[in-house]
Amino acid sequence: GIAAFWVLLFHFADILFRMLPEVSFLKPLVAAGGLAVPLFFILSGYVIGWRYIAKLASPTIQTVLRFWVLRLGRVYPVHICTLLISLAMVARHGWPTDEGHSLGKFIANCFLIHSWDYNFSLSWNYPAWSISSEWFAYLIFPLVAIGLARIDRVWAFRVTILMCVLSACVYAFEEHLVFKGLVEVVPTFVGGVALAIAYPPSRSSRWLRLSSTIGLLVAMILPYTIGSGSGQKAIYLILFFILVGVLGVSGHQAMSLWRSRILVYLGEISYSLYMTHTIAITLLTRFFSFEAFYDRSLSIRLGIVLVSLFVIIITAVGMFYTIEQPFRNLSRRLNIKSKVG
Image (cartoon, rainbow, N blue to C red; front, side, top):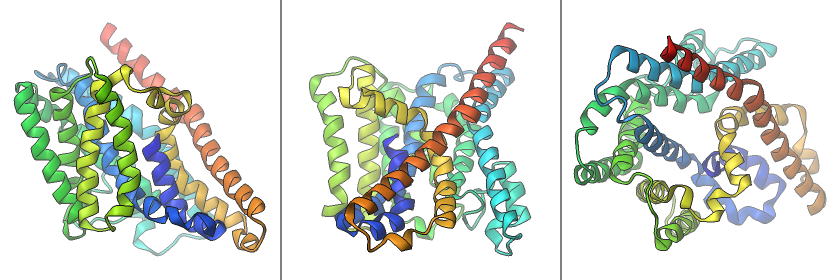
């Protein structure tokens, strides 16, 4: 939830700092919001590894297909819905000529392969590139599970360290990568899976519970101590692995901050928030003139920013309850029926 909101602020930054120059001290932190995406990959690998590694240690066609169907049911409904909304928005102003909104890119989005290009580029609902990359990780997970399910925790720790270092290198030099959408997801996701084997949820010490909050504070301070660039990216990746591992071990014994209702709920709607926020921001800028309020009082400008953020979050809430949750529950019910059958 925190990561999704961080990405939201990253894309909302232009409006935020034009409306509220008083909070310009937040610029370094907000500018680092794009790095929340590899955190998604690590966390996804951890959760998927913890949940499915044993089930797919000796996979069958049936178990693999069931895994893929469940994963597709989790990500595809919101993806296709936001893709169609993007299509409607583009069609409203005439079909564009840029490659990002081409028919070929639209078809690639439909098949969730749009981030698999040799030369990476954004298209249609821009945040969906990471869902395409995530889908690739899901497709290869059965092979990953076969290998990692047979190693002990010591070797899992070594694999985690290797993937952590590799991830840091990948993101430090991402500008020079080919097949960037795939190269970025593999070490982070596989590292998350290995992390789940090395440090599964278990009893947590007070120090570990405290260190998760310290990790969050370090993540907030880091942009002010290390300038943007390769070094910052590498350190963030290492920090994210540590943070996911600490929180994973702590499980339900994590500090109350992480178990607060507002953060748990933000986590629940985080996927819908991530997938709808750029659409909501685009619509806000199209139908509301922020420029007319740049010289107004602080209270008015602050109110407009807060209302705008509220609208963006409400959009995500609507997507969650109308699309994400119903289809997620449906895929689970169909999975249970297939098991019974």
